[in-house]
Length: 431
Ligand SMILES: Nc1ncnc2c1ncn2[C@@H]1O[C@H](COP(=O)(O)OP(=O)(O)OP(=O)(O)O)[C@@H](O)[C@H]1O
Ligand SMILES: [Mg+2]
Image (cartoon, rainbow, N blue to C red; front, side, top):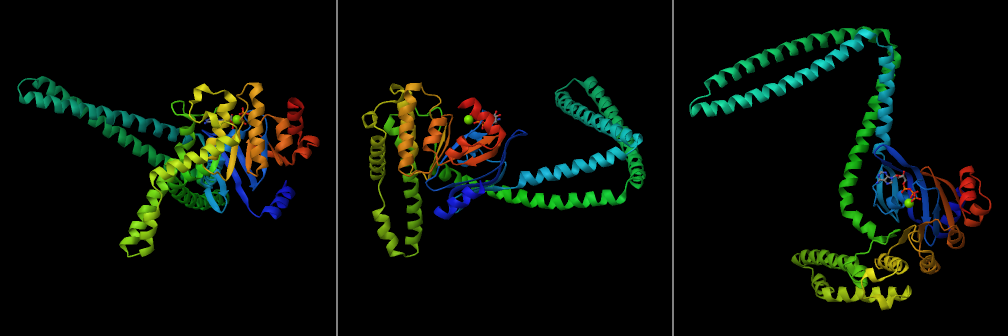
């Protein structure tokens, strides 16, 4: 795997996209467990693997449709995601659990009993405080009513309830402080029976890890905050094509394709306008000239439509520019979805099983379009069940299993001479 990467890096210098230690968890379940991948310019990387192994999640992380839990993603020279906060927090939690297990395993029954009693007393105190609050609100209401006459009996009753609750609270509080003192002495006793060296070194380890974790958290928060500004731009330049085309049914084919480029084009002009106006206020003469030459809305729209029309030509669907997606076949819809992604001039195309929702007779036309893109030099990552296609078109195949890349090799080698046992088993089922 390393050799292959080294070879590619010698030819093409830098990868388009890189990941290091990419981890993704969904509510505690780890789906990606540290993916290191480099996709070099012009590469066509096929990703294969069993259902549920994390292929789509990997692709969605590359495009930041999913925010990774930990690791690093680089796009060109830009770090688009980097965080080791969750990884560090996990180490901290493990250290804490280890110490807890050591201490409680060595503590005596009396200390454990005292701790339990304190817990129960605290919840009782909480309940009593709630009760008190309710009584006080009731009393307030009654007083308001009494002003208008009547309800004296009720007021008296509430006052009694309040004072009863108060004394109950006081006695619970006293009980808690006695218990706490008790626990403190018992803890000190237990401590003397523990191995001081062991607890001390555990505490030191925890303190050091706390520091690392809090630094990582600060960095993580900062990164997430500034990501808002970069995430859209990144999604646009990593063209994604899904299994289900996700076209807008209420827009024509042309509008589906030009929606994003027009929006971005207008936003870019607006931003430039703002910068130029600021420069003009500072007396910049060149800025004035540039401001006058900025493209107008109509020009942006026309350019987007022209580009869309050219791309439609490449997939053989120029005659469909003005129809609505509902009138298209699945294969045609997917070709339009590909054009829509291409319209943003992506630096890489990510395909997630682009043909698996299609009727068999339409698979060919979509694969043909993808193959043509590949031949034109587009860098792409394609998750696919089409092993024949992977073999024919891919320059490299990644076998993903249980959230890690288990094999990474050119197709002839990966299919012809698989090394990983899980890959052998997988291939025996799908080939
Ligand atoms: N948003 C989510 N919330 C919770 N779990 C998720 C989420 N997305 C994916 N998963 C889980 O992560 C695991 C990997 O899913 P993923 O879609 O990446 O697998 P896959 O390799 O693409 O599978 P398939 O070949 O079936 O498409 C699965 O167990 C899935 O249930
Ligand atoms: Mg999938």
